[in-house]
Image (cartoon, rainbow, N blue to C red; front, top):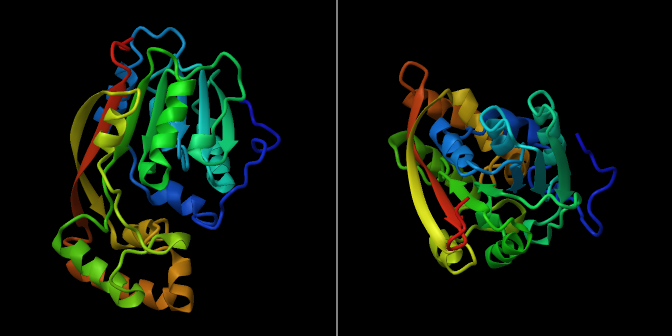
Length: 283
């Protein structure tokens, strides 16, 4: 595995958001549905030496899921603003990467430049992180760096903040009693949704051949796992509560246990993949 000794020139690791929560992130964040993983792998049919560029990789969930399915992957570039996340991702990939090489890039996604010449990505992925990015600039970078036949996948499934069920509505209300009605966004104040849809962003880019794929996902949470998940979110991370975090977690645990059935909280989610290519760019 390639492990650069230093971040990319000029890069600064943004550890203020999720810097200390990488272990919780790896443990509590839901993975990708199997159907979505196989969809991504299928985009590389006919590509002799696939190369993955994973933007906003976090703890490396996307490459970790792809490697056992797409055995022909020869190289992976991991991009994140958080050095702790990248270190966690590298550790997670070590047991499964085989001969696949892995490079890391610390910095914002649109500033990515490859460190390995001749490794143009044939698959670019961005899972649950596109909303944090300068989207037009990211798409322009992808066009500049990607192989002619490359596929681009923008993926996500919302969060427990946006999910509508009895227990998530009650939990959201509790968070609001501590932090205010507006959804908090870590070190960046409050969160406002994108001015337009991801579909519009991608359709206006070089990757204008866009198809949407939706996969239903049924999850079962324990109350304790929900608390672990909340610690990894931008809307309920511990620093937002300051000295009241323990108080919040105790109250949240009681609320979640009251809503649990047989110790389980159910979430019926939908995982969406926007799969895009340049017109005429199918492999």
